[in-house]
Image (tube, rainbow, N blue to C red; front, side, top):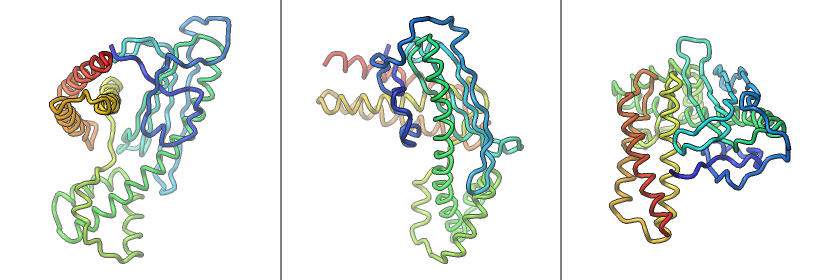
Length: 290
């Protein structure tokens, strides 16, 4: 199986982009604390955090961070310590959606010192989650502005339907977009073309198991791409393998492009996950042969 990778705990998560990209590093080289006492697994959970947050635009969010304790990673089949982040938009309303979800894995060190380290990480992750919310809202604001301009010119029903969906989820952002367009009084000659290349914000399934599958697919897309890049640099990545990866990523993105939680196809997600896992194993096997 591919080696388990995770964030380096000593990094402190000082960069928002590290959290956003969900970078993974080999945890076999990581050591945290020098505690001599080994704790029982049930004592290796420090709870978590539930925090409401209102963005600069006025959208209500809820940040939920949970220490899931020691568990076996489903992809690598190795023991790790996992912390999960879930961010809800419009929390407490009928239009509530999960707009961000990530797993962060640490070494399975069962000491009081490691528990204290995880507690510090949870507080740091909560602060960085707020930064990501603001960054994503700015990107979403630009998308909505392009969408408004495109609909104003074309009166396309698809643009209208997407605007309605955006207004249901981000009413404050739609209002701000309208206000900014009126202030700018600009003509966006490339609006429709730019819109086609700009995805809307991804939402995540409310079901925990299904959401876990989505996160695993996102993780494998990054892992396979990174390992393929290594193979390519070493001259061992053939065209067939590269084309297979590109096709898989395209299909995976389509599978993950649900605008509503109910739009995720369970069977398609599982097939996508299995295909990516097969390709990842092939790539890892070639890397071991180098």
